[in-house]
Length: 623
Ligand SMILES: *[C@@H]1O[C@H](CO)[C@@H](O)[C@H](O)[C@H]1NC(C)=O
Ligand SMILES: *[C@@H]1O[C@H](CO)[C@@H](O)[C@H](O)[C@H]1NC(C)=O
Ligand SMILES: *[C@@H]1O[C@H](CO)[C@@H](O)[C@H](O)[C@H]1NC(C)=O
Ligand SMILES: *[C@@H]1O[C@H](CO)[C@@H](O)[C@H](O)[C@H]1NC(C)=O
Ligand SMILES: *[C@@H]1O[C@H](CO)[C@@H](O)[C@H](O)[C@H]1NC(C)=O
Ligand SMILES: *[C@@H]1O[C@H](CO)[C@@H](O)[C@H](O)[C@H]1NC(C)=O
Ligand SMILES: *[C@@H]1O[C@H](CO)[C@@H](O)[C@H](O)[C@H]1NC(C)=O
Ligand SMILES: *[C@@H]1O[C@H](CO)[C@@H](O)[C@H](O)[C@H]1NC(C)=O
Ligand SMILES: *[C@@H]1O[C@H](CO)[C@@H](O)[C@H](O)[C@H]1NC(C)=O
Ligand SMILES: [Cu+2]
Image 1: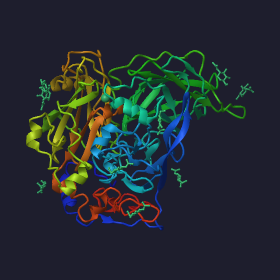
Image 2: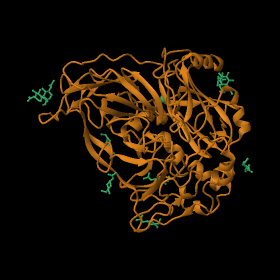
Image 3: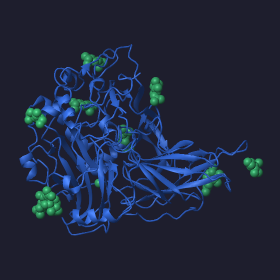
Image 4: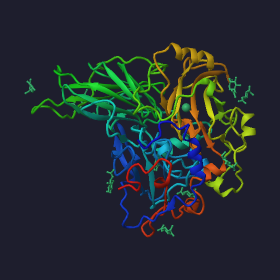
């Protein structure tokens, strides 16, 4: 067991070793003798997805979704990502995608103003495992990768972090998963818009806002068919999930959509046994349907029938909350023997299932962290008494004078003139961007409005309450809130206003216990309230242990575009900048610096993990 059972006793050691790490993490030259653990080529290409006509989308190794990546716990890996898009910058983003940035006035500005909508590529949820400049958030942590260059991302997967992460099928294997199963299958969900990213982005940012179209439908592993948001029938061939009778499969359900909330069930297979939520193992919780929001991941065990009455069963998926209802399918295909069909299969004429309306408490207060010491969280759930500070993220959708849309956080909106560089770069350079002030933050519910960041000190135990308020017309939408930097203990959510004592009482009487998650929901509940009135909340607890610059944001891409995101600076300057000190950090501080490689220059990244407190884990260098 290389990974500490608890962060707390180790914390002083952690900080001391960070501060004392000078010259430890060395710059390495990845010349022609270097072999990355995985290679990905990002391109843009014309593709037809289901019933949406051919348009330009982002491809990973020529496909969407991209190829699967699998790593083992304890391993340190290098993933080389080539930006083969000739005229666009790229980052493996926090949110969803390999992100080409066509017209980004500044990296900070660019975040709410570009370039996504093709989803699949980032180190989603794998936050503690990324080296400081490998998290991928462009405005927070790093410059984008220039065209025709590559970047070597270093990831380390601590023991105890097994689970389903993002990047299409980017999973971490344990040597011994806590549940037995015969195989695993992916259900990677995407949504599919009639327009390309450039068109959508411009329309979202137009004054007045001009994007009114909904996602056409849901894709499962890149394919889909059924009922589109225009009300038309889309008769395209479906994804096929092959299974054997009488077996148990781990189904990995990944919410790779950019807007759609999805409800899903399987014909004649009513016992979906949830065992993992956002990479945290849970005790088994049985449900007849799943609900998955953008950014969320679940695993459930599916026991197949021993003597199936037929060979194909439909997996039925419907969108919820945004846009007109759509319906899509995949096929659970029993491969019973020599005469089994492998398709193609098409959508049924009538839906075999009736899916429930949105459950606004889906899996809340019922999941329990897996009660097995070897797989339980590495820190201990902080009680209400341990909380040292409450922070509010209070959001509000406003309509500008010209009809544009913008999200305010704690009454402030991002001022695009503020920073011309990624936060972390500015903090190193100390050129104009001072360290966020806790004094100012305490006067604004946790936000320093001058720097537009939430500061936190290492060792604090925060209760973060994300609160929705009625928009400029009193409306309230659903939002999946996602945190980088660490998984938080999820305290549930509800209608109205958060009340800690009431919520504690609710936990005391519920069957569940808080689980460590990274993407959880604020639902729209009644969908309407007074303008500015609090309505809908989600509460988290978090021990601040990871120095760095991290994002916490809504995972709906249009909402991110409208500013529904927050930057967090955790730790003081010694702690944050000490992770990779000068002079090693130099190559990261300029756009196109020595850290990126190209045809004539090898990449020279910092080899961060061999020297880190996480231990060398795997091979410490990759191979
Ligand atoms: C992506 O393509 C490259 C080059 O063709 C190949 O070397 C690499 O293995 C592929 N990556 C994956 C994950 O399949
Ligand atoms: C996106 O679509 C618009 C309108 O069809 C087109 O003018 C533009 O060239 C497309 N952009 C890309 C990158 O494909
Ligand atoms: C890429 O990003 C750099 C740094 O922000 C910027 O100067 C450049 O114009 C961008 N290039 C493109 C094609 O967007
Ligand atoms: C869908 O297309 C398939 C293959 O062309 C065809 O066999 C099937 O009858 C079609 N279904 C409907 C409802 O049109
Ligand atoms: C296919 O095989 C099953 C037994 O596995 C048998 O019951 C069925 O009749 C076969 N179907 C055809 C079309 O041969
Ligand atoms: C935001 O502004 C409203 C109205 O001016 C005020 O009532 C509220 O207290 C403010 N919230 C914060 C977090 O400052
Ligand atoms: C957070 O919001 C609640 C509800 O509006 C308010 O009572 C509280 O004062 C706010 N600030 C803090 C630091 O809790
Ligand atoms: C940051 O905090 C550490 C630990 O408390 C302390 O040793 C160090 O001096 C602090 N650095 C700054 C710049 O305040
Ligand atoms: C390759 O990288 C080197 C070093 O960053 C740079 O000087 C050179 O211009 C780059 N070549 C191309 C074709 O971009
Ligand atoms: Cu949102």
